[in-house]
Amino acid sequence: MKLFLSLITAFIFFFQSDLENLRSSYAKANQSNANTEAFIHLAEKQSGSDAITSGYKAAAKIMEAKVTKNNRKALVKSGATSLESIIKSNPNNIELRLIRLSVQENIPKIVGYRSSMKEDKTFLINNYSKQNATLKSYVKKFAMQSKSFTDTERATIK
Image (cartoon, rainbow, N blue to C red; front, side, top):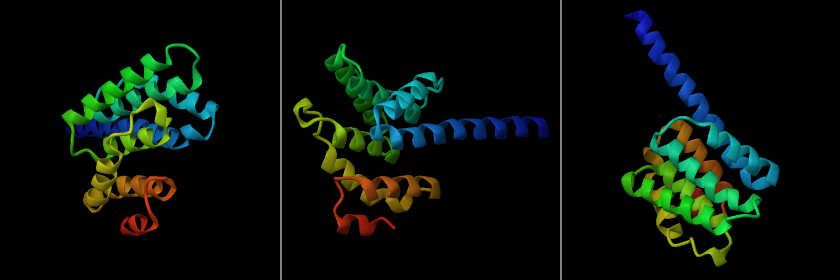
């Protein structure tokens, strides 16, 4: 029994480590093309099919349009469709909302993928206090550097 519990614990820590790596890489992805490519590669390597991992994979597909010359429109459309589907299935997941907000905030306006920014920002503010410490820290870091949040809104995220 102890062996079984140890294996489950090890699996959870292994999964958390992958998720933490994805989060860290995603946070740095817009700083340079090299970081974007590193995030895309990391996301593609992930074998998990949970909603959050799938959300990062969809974001990677959208971001791939930034560093490639071919099929940009198809990459954005495919990634956005996938991300919207994942969020529709998991509407109360704060991390998925953060991913979508950050994608929409950083994608060129001409693409037209910006319709959920206000909704997602409001969702993040309203649900911040209900999250665990790790997610609170992640959301706070995002909000502090985000172009979408005002100083007043940032102050509500403590």
